[in-house]
Image (cartoon, rainbow, N blue to C red; front, side, top):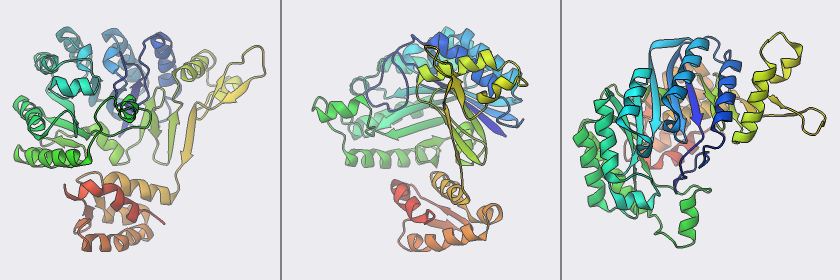
Length: 407
C-alpha cells in the first residue's frame, strides 16, 4: 500500500489565515505543470512498486486546474504507478472555483472524493477569513457536488472565530448535519507566523482570536458530532462509519507515500524527503531533469536522482548542485517519536503490542512506563494494550506527546 500527494501551489488570492505554501497568481502554472509531470516520471521508483491506494490533490487550490490538466496528470500517474482499481482519489476545492459542469467533469475523470473548503456558511465569518465565496455559493456547491454524482464529500469548517459566537457555530453545524455529508474536518483558528491575519491582528485591523471561544466551540463540536453518529477519529476529523480519509490515515499509520510539487513531503518507511518551497526553483530543477533524464543509463544523469537535482548553469558559470529535495534518515528513536505523535492524534491510539513487535521491547516498555503517571493524572487513557486520548484529553495532545517522547 502507498499514497500519492500532489501539491498545486496556486490560489486566486491568499486567504488571511493560510500558512501553506502557495502563490496568489497563475503566472507560472504552465511551467509548473511541465515540471510536475517530469517529477512524476523521474521519481517513479520511489515507492518500489507498491500499489497506490490513494491519490490526493492538495494545495493551494487544485480546482484551479482545468479538467484537461487534471486528466493528463491522472493518466500519467496511472501509466507509471500501479494504481489500485478502487483507489481513493481526492481533490481539494474552493467554492469560488466550482461549477456543476466542472464537478461533473471531475467525476467522469475518476475523482471520487471531494474536500471542499467551505470554512463557514456565514458571510461575516467568510469576510473575516478573506474568503472569495459567499454563504449562498457555499451551499450551492454542495448541491452541485451531489448532482454530479459525488457521495464521498468532506468539507472544512473553522471554529473559534471572533466573528462567530456559539449560536452561529451551532448553526454552521446544523447546516452540515442537514446535508448528511460523510466527513467533516473542523479546525480551530490559529495564527500562522507568515499569515496575513497574524499581521492584521498585530496592527489592530481585525479582532484577535480568543482561546476560550475555540474551547467552547470544540466542546460543542464533539458533543454534536457524537449525537449525530460521527466518529471523532482524529483531532480535527469526524466521519460516518467507514468514511474516514484513507489518504490522511496513511500518514498516521506510517504508510509510504510520495509527494509531488513544491513543499510536498514523501516517506518511504525509513526516511523523509521534502521538496523545496519555491515554484521557481522547483520548475528550474525538474524541467532540467525532464531534458536530461530521458535515459537512466546516461552517465550524465546521475546528479538527477531522488535526493538532488542540478540547476542548469547561468552566465556560463560552472555547474552547481542545489538540492531541491532534502532528505532525513530516521533513527529508531525518531521512528518511535513519530509513531507516538501521529497515533495519539487518532482514536486508534498507540498499539503497545505492535510497538513491541515492530520496534522492540525497549521502546514499548519505555512508552508504557512513561504513560503510567499520565494515566494516573487523567491525561491519558488505556484499554488493554492501547493508549489513547479522549475528546477532553485531545485538547492537551502536545503536552502528553512530549512526555512520551524518547529522552
